[in-house]
Image (cartoon, rainbow, N blue to C red):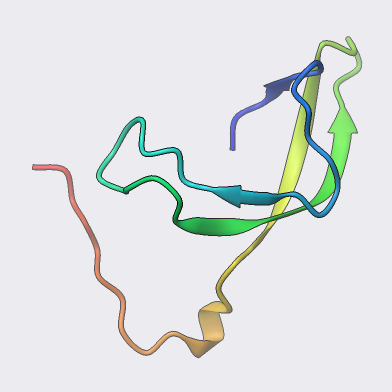
Length: 68
């Protein structure tokens, strides 16, 4: 996730989902949840750490979508 403006209303435990705005993924796919919020030294941007929704060790098959 890119750095966010400090005014973005993000809270710990917020669920993060795909926006559907860009790329091949539709809106609403679960990505993860916010587990940490830190602020850059200039206090203009916040850095969000997200715990992935999936447990990668439990995946059996993966589909890779490549931009053509």
